[in-house]
Length: 322
Figure (cartoon, rainbow, N blue to C red):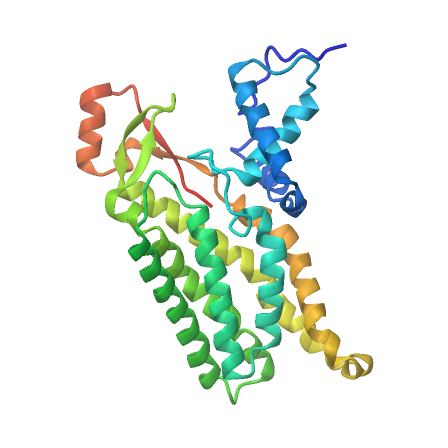
């Protein structure tokens, strides 16, 4: 018996995106690290199925479960603005495998200056790629801007880590273990706005409730980027703050002193345990499709919207990126 797909809307969220729990469930679904291993042909199949479902021409015998799985793969691998397939490393579904390796080694090798510089450079290179991949694609970024953003963020992270390492040399060992988080938080405040500076300069595309473009707003861009910065710091915080405390306790145990070679792999594994929960939680802090009252926009854009639509458009909507 064929499933009735007449009322099925593949773009309707499975969970209420107006609630925090609904957003967390949504991001648990699309940031599933297992989707990174899905073959390219299966991702291409998912895109075809999503596009056919939107047109109402799905193949006979298609089940709702198949369409939901296709949408999961599509949301995990294709950009919401352009529909283009994103590079694997830049996808949010790669945050757990990529982030756990980098975070684990940053927390393990924080004592020597060369190690601090190397792992902060690796982390900011990874972050720059993730930030660019998950930007609002309606605002193009030049190669020169990307290079400047990358250099600035990397320099900030390294300078923060090196400076704090020097200041905390005489502090308790645990304080030194928190230096990587301070560097990551500082760099996120630079990396994300710099990588997405074009949105702040030219404004981000805002739409009405029917998805019609009605202008570009710099204020909307600032709000969206601020929310992304908060989400990224939140994503890293539990692992990078609590894991040093855990490792400080574990390393004092007799059997741990005998297996020092396993300390780094253990930190990587524990980092993954934190990230597998914190990636969807942090992404779900704010709706990806933001709603903003017209009264919050720039005065000239408010005037343009009211001149054309009157009071029919009280809110505008935009993709804040991830």
